Image 1 (tube, rainbow, N blue to C red):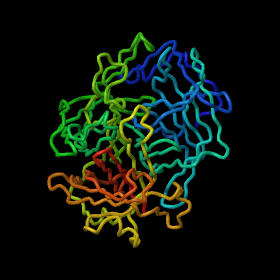
Image 2: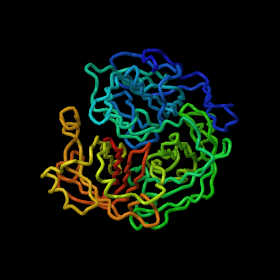
Image 3: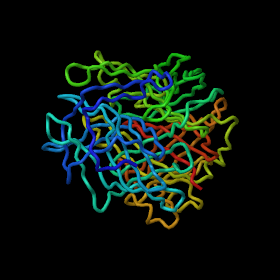
Image 4: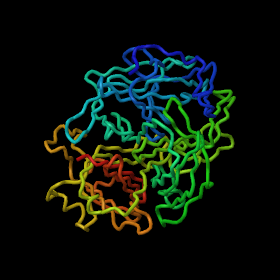
Length: 485
């Protein structure tokens, strides 16, 4: 765990995995600084000392931000980050390695954004993450001063699901949306593995459910540092029609980076002449991490909320190798058809997320911890949806506080009807339905309603996972569930 009180120089030269095992993944920026600011209680910055706890790569998720100062104060979006959750010392840290800041100049460095205490709640393996310190840029326009805001008591509302003993899971910090995370300890294996995935949604500025990828499948294998993506099939949500195809086969380069052993397509990222009006060279870039032997896949396709690559002129679309939106999350395709009754009979922890409706600030996103799979369905669940035989009940927690639940379950105000499993694709449920109860905290309507979705299911380290993407004619919704019993 990094010392949150140590300074970092944003003007230092910084090389990202240069020369590692011949890998062509490089991020070199010299003489960098940054702008803007945030309210804080003390001035401090983070250290670039290597972390000893496992590092989890997290892709771009709409709503993830850090504070910037000024009057009035605001927030600035964050791209891919890494989380370090140290279960020995009961601490966590969120670190950014992106180009931070616009205007006068750009800074690239190891910068802590949030840090605090981690603990296991004791109910179904849920980890709580309490933010003690967050960092933002100062209001100075010429220098990149990162200042700390300390919280006493710490900010509650942060959670991690299924990290312990696994190669990934999902993390939601207080005030931030949920992000899929993967500990890419090694590159993909030489044996071909088929994955099914769903898009990590953006607002409708960056993801069109009628034309863009909602779900798909891919075969992944490697030879040395070269990773090959074959048989890429991608489909839309509205009509299940084929989406804009990626080149297949496609190749990427995998090797050790600050974000783990991730695969980059087309294989290198070189930023030159960083900052301001001078512009930069930023080719379309997808970054993919695979959990070692556990069947979890996470992709960041490098896009912004608008669906185009930052820093490109003329604007270039995201690298649509897998998914659309801001990336994809997937699971290894089951070797045989799943027993749907067993899948819905399991108990799950996870998150319900929506990037919200298009707006300049995307401030209307929502993200809530959720539990699914009541062992005995409460009578109140009947008001959500009638049983269909493929339906699983669940919902959020009152006041986002699972410690108040003696059973570890939250409310029963959401239901998922998986529907029929696709006969040709094990673990794919292309005609799922989400029933949103009126009492769900993230319900934008205030009344019960339903919307179509697609779901994929499989196993991660012997436990079931269900990933779902839906659209309610106004905004997209994602539900991520991992078996917890």
